[in-house]
Length: 217
Image (tube, helix red, strand yellow):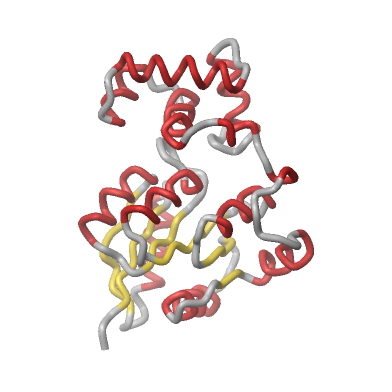
């Protein structure tokens, strides 16, 4: 039987190690790699071509929410399972409306973890019990309507990447190197970000990033 190739993406090494050890207990699973942020995950996906990616939300440089669309573009057949501690409506709505295959919270047990893999490989969408209850209760339509909009919706995907890196304290040169763009382009993005978000300085960008869960204290 052909094994299910799995990539684990989480910025906490001890969680990655534990998850990999647990997943490896099933003979049908093959761990093809691990990554500590969304940007590294995109590189690993190109090389490893996994069937399933376990993706955390809160990660440095490129968080899980922003990585979803890029993964979908580069590997459309890859199943994305969000594995996170965040259960807020904004993240659930965005993830589901942007094509993820599963949404799990980190307090699930091994049985549910394995069930999620089997379900998404069969072409289904799998939600853990708590998220499933929230969806039934809170969402009549799984679209990003005004109820779940955020100020960051005004930013383009590239501007969202630059926004997170600015909030994490990277200099313009570092951002340019990470994104393979010129420092002048970074400054242009910075100007547009501050204009769109009505931020007058970096401190306001950091406060907004914290409020929206893009970075953690």
